[in-house]
Image (cartoon, rainbow, N blue to C red; front, side, top):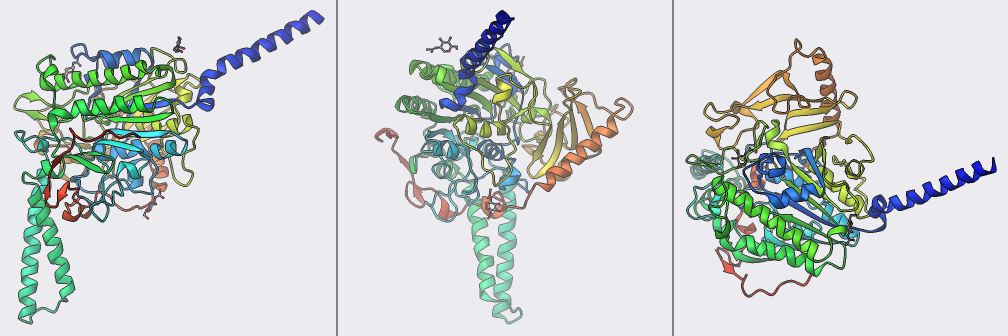
Length: 589
Ligand SMILES: *[C@@H]1O[C@H](CO)[C@@H](O)[C@H](O)[C@H]1NC(C)=O
Ligand SMILES: *[C@@H]1O[C@H](CO)[C@@H](O)[C@H](O)[C@H]1NC(C)=O
Ligand SMILES: *[C@@H]1O[C@H](CO)[C@@H](O)[C@H](O)[C@H]1NC(C)=O
């Protein structure tokens, strides 16, 4: 009897001890703050990476990262384009909540000199980590706006959004940054601006003549207002001709412009140098480093070393160079002996760009078995991206998680790891991923995911946990061009509304768990639960819509217009150019 008691006491002590020994792993999040390195590629397709099934492209560094950590196979971007997807990533909220999704066809920030951008009252993960004592850095692309009212107010700037250090491009790489490449900036926008300019000029002329002859009674104030808009539209239209390199393709360090226009050949190496030096100078404190790569966006600037080396043309070369850059960052982490104290995350902001072609050459990414790509809100190819986590000793190694996860999950995940809390005064759509990543739970918390194209809801995903099925209902799909499977060549990028889309009632239904390529359309005949599924999804949409509140539209036509007084300028406007990269002293943040 006594022996048995002793036995049980011993077992209990052992269990308690085990628990303590086991806890440092999971408790690490509470007792010590890991460094956090988030690497986000631009326009990279899920099919462009070795560990996601590509056998001919070489991405050894990313593959190794996955081997040493966790590979997510259903990692979903909140939007299929840069500006809204990144806004959601930074804030953990669907971009409609912050006004970063567009009602019009202009779905990303179009100029550095626009007034739209990530609103200052949104809270990024950087802001939360900064409050928790982290030093926070952003190296690379921003594309979330700069100014609100004057040239240097920097209301949307990374340094106003929780980053202590910024080196990179406030805008986005694009063909227009390169002298010899065909311009990429929205042609639709150009013609629309021209049309508006002409209409307004005519209106102003009519009013002036009318007023002078006494035929029209309209106040001078209104006329000046008309003339003002006319001037703005004209300037925006005009600024699209050859000025983009000077206006938009610039590099900044903190609040200072370092290159205007940027020296493309130099960018990859300076970004890498900056990332490594940030790690070196902050290795003694918890840091957050967000490396927002300019790779693999057009015009695919690639250094000599990688040109002509891949089996997939310039695009493949650029992907392989990107992988090399990731490897160099990982190496810096190892060299500084930070491997076990650093959580690494790798993803892409959305799917590969199928319409990016030059002649016959593919200049955009490959989305593997998934249908569609960049700019398409509903189809899997636009939103399903690679997602990899590594944290030796805390996260398991070499495992694959198929559960639905979102890029928005990074927000609460890193907030909790840093010992912070997410804001309580607003809806956060992301979920803490640590329980899932550590295997403490089997299912992700996401039951429904809403797939937007601009502000238009195109599709909904339902993870039916008891059956394991992943249903996806499409309410709207873009019309594909006949010559290219799964792409809209005709219009540049696929539209979200209007003549270029098809509305579906009842919605198109697929079971992604059986049919990830969305090839076998389900119907009430083939899927007995069809009506139940659709009505459950419909209810979820209604509930979701009730949580949305109107906010200022950051991508309204007025906000995206080029405004001379907001143009970041190194020099005296409009004579904006400089190259300070060679002689500038490196920051000591
Ligand atoms: C690998 O990636 C390249 C470049 O995007 C693509 O052309 C090719 O089809 C991919 N191969 C596979 C097997 O996915
Ligand atoms: C890092 O963590 C791994 C896995 O727990 C362990 O094997 C290794 O010894 C650790 N390295 C250091 C330097 O602590
Ligand atoms: C930010 O300000 C706008 C405009 O006043 C408001 O509509 C929005 O709800 C605010 N957002 C948050 C998260 O407080």
